[in-house]
Length: 513
Image (cartoon, rainbow, N blue to C red; front, side, top):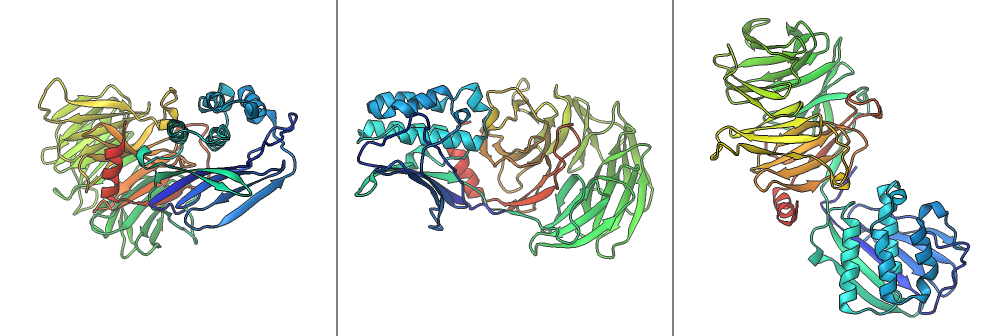
């Protein structure tokens, strides 16, 4: 999959100079709207005769693909609500503002219309707005058309700026008056990792970029640990085990650790391929981290224990703690281990691991916890909320904030999905990314407390996220997570998104929420 870094969405309508005769029993049909790499256009050619030709034209590739010639206007009444049908049948006899008033109803569809797919809703809105104008209009009316189209598209693409939207009017001897709206949209370069020989067969549990390279470590429920060289687009290591792998981490670039459903902690030499049992829990081992500062391996499990192991020797504990519930998530920040325990985040000093020195209740059932540099942490919940807390706030009464991690399309609804992972950009201060169980990846700015960019919804849940060391690449694991009964068990995928900090900053400057 490839998505261009910038694009234009062009919407045009060519309207014949003479009235069009519409058969009342068969209203017009809109065939298709396609969004292509780099931008696309939605066109409607209304000739002097009753037939019409719908086509899609790429603004970059200049390729035109006919979708078909329709001899008679036909469309199922279920595709539009009653207002839309009445509008189509009576639009010819109305003045412009009457048409625009009726077209406005299409911008706010009925509950029946809302049930349609996003693509169909966008298609219908755009067609109705353009269809509403069959005569020369004033500058004020043109701006209203632009505003209506921007509002109609805002749920489906990220628009750079309304000021950059262009509306042009031209005349063609055969087609009549032609109206065209060009909308610049925000996009990012994205690619999908290929596993030709041995694809991932089960859910992905964790992905992590190496500390000093663009090698990506992948653990999954199919018992395999994989190492993928992103620069060369090549799988360079694979080792199978006896149980599902629930977490993984690096020790340098040459050694990896995994936590398994058989309670084991396993160490892998990524050069030789040798693996050894490093330690065990009394129940599922769910989390594993390696500390560069202390040379320790820190693990957690459903046995309600957090263990520290000396990485220089096998099965040698250097400390252990017991918590009230099974460990769901864990992260390191320098000498500090952050552990999600129910609705609280416990913190441990790895140099004296006898007990936690700090515990913060965030009032949400925590799914993941990640450090915010050395200033605080962010916790994602199973209810779709994110809490960002500071260690040493300037105002003790204001130690952070929380928000609902909802995509734009669902902001007025209450169906929330778990926040499965959070990662902070290593190169752009205050920027962090969330991945949710309903397939959305969203970039946020902690300082402005705003959404910066929302990526297109993916088919699967977002199981894990990882930035590379420079912050140039963001890896996204799109995979079912066994959290919900209605998750689709379609093959998991891993996407690599190329991140441009200047582009992110420009998105942030233009974001409104």
